[in-house]
Length: 283
Image 1 (cartoon, rainbow, N blue to C red):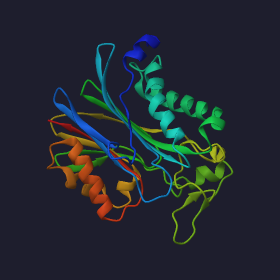
Image 2: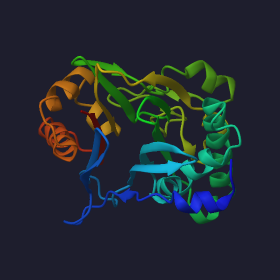
Image 3: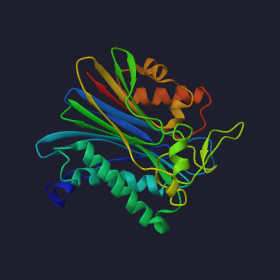
Image 4: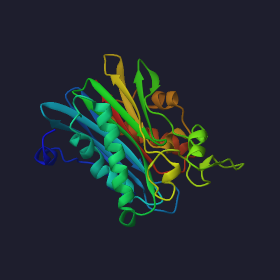
């Protein structure tokens, strides 16, 4: 990869999803035959909004890159904010990004997590899940994630999940092999060491010995049957299935309006979490 001068040229216009009236709305934007937009709503919790979003197209080395991400913070928003500012830069700095994109993403996830842990006094004890999508020249999509934010693609009206929900119950053996445990208290979700409801995350220094920040990665080809991709935090997926989410917005042409409608649908189903949603439409 070229040096930092190129990275300055691709500085992200990323959005913080706040609760003020003028925050949390990503007006729809178009690149060629693709439109994208986002919306965010603060949940019922007493703490400030902890979600951060990236939704942007950038040119790099003769290619068009669509950069999309949901960072869902917990125990504070500083780690999610750091990821919004730095994770894509770190991925694109990897020397093998163009030749081995998956390896570049894995290396960047690891190195970014290491820096977050080193800066825990500044960034706090919290952490963040992440789902990231890199769309290359409108044709190839690479999705990576840690935690339970999710990416879903609609093809011919059928929902296809592109990410993996990293639930403690599914990774119980791995957590126990690292010396941790998974609680299973009636009336509550399974939690790592009785605390965290995801098995993989950035940060969380006090739990990191029992957690992983290793992403699951999938590759997709965008073809004539691809209608849209949506990225959303778990506040959507606790109350809506993948297919229900696709069905709720498939007839809405404007991506920001679609993201807003999907969040409103989740709230109507009693979702109480902070919710962030990006919709990328192919026309």
